[in-house]
Image 1: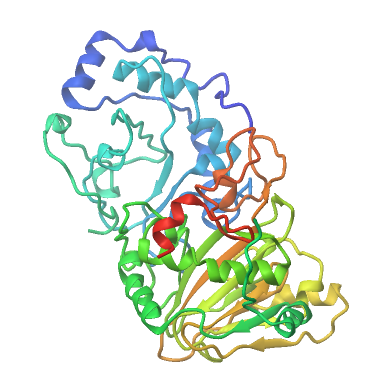
Image 2: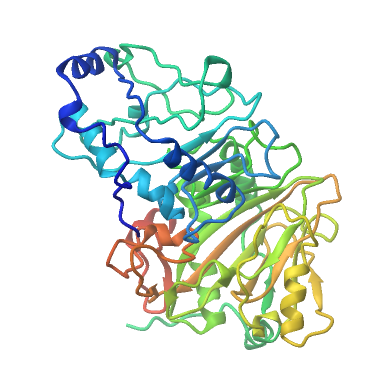
Length: 187
Length: 291
């Protein structure tokens, strides 16, 4: 596998020391924290260019993904396309999803001394794509000890409410309840 | 210690397998087991996994899927114990090993397929295109009908004798070709000097199946009838197989390549269990499936 280091320009503005005490507090209060310019436009293009071959069964390594929804020919035209386990299929994507820099930011926010990769995934929501159920990542990692997860969600296009943007309930990480694992697409 | 075994297949059947590249074997599964397996299809394709573990591949679900499209799922034994009990059959594994002359059979992949009326063709392919990263080499697959498999309703079809042709490059698309589903097979036939390949569409009753060599070209036509064709697939490699030595990833690793530990060529029995071996050995966690 190629080096997982990002190109030198990637993520330079952010280091662990750039996460201020205020940002840390905000993350723990809200349950999320937004970073601007995590990737530059060139890097975003590099990632987006890989999606068409992947969803058309052209896997650069010849290894198939862990999950794959919205396969052309078998799916409705407005189906959400989702693929998980990208790093095994494509080394360009692996160079981003296995980034030590992103992992370091995640670990710093959680107060961990290191971060172990859990999974990667991409989402493509065409016009009229159905909603995605509200869920909590920890529900899907309950078999892991310690059962703690942190996720970095990166926009690769302009996202707005009408284009299926990510919605988060601030403070819901404090809710003391258990959820049922469910299929996330098209509730 | 060598166990005295009652032969499950005759020498004529073994000879036929090596001549044609495939062999039909009747009554592999009892009718009640077929019924129990068929009952699992709807929940599985709807994402209700009895064990809570997701499959390796899951193509088509009722929420995002196009009505009438084919459904395919692999790695199903991990999701559902009813399916696992059938996939871990020592009898089918023994037959596979016997046909290949191996001392045992290791399950490398499993799958279920459903093709409703109107479902498109499945491109003819060779399983070795997707399972060719291990040593000693060799793949044998058992395709089991879980409904009446007949011509016109997308039954399995084979290019007779094509196991003797060269292994071709992986076909670009299984489900959604914009050309004839036999075209890649026909190109391979031409390269092999076979002008008019003998394509056989089999009639198989539920619970019966067909074993095919890893290099045998096979696929299925469009389902033109108002019935759902259902089947299950069990693919084996030799019991003593391990991964060939590779670097950071297994080139062309398809599904199995995901389960190779870095710098370790072992095919871990946790993912590739030995379902039958001629000395009586069987992967230990399969015990609940042996009753």
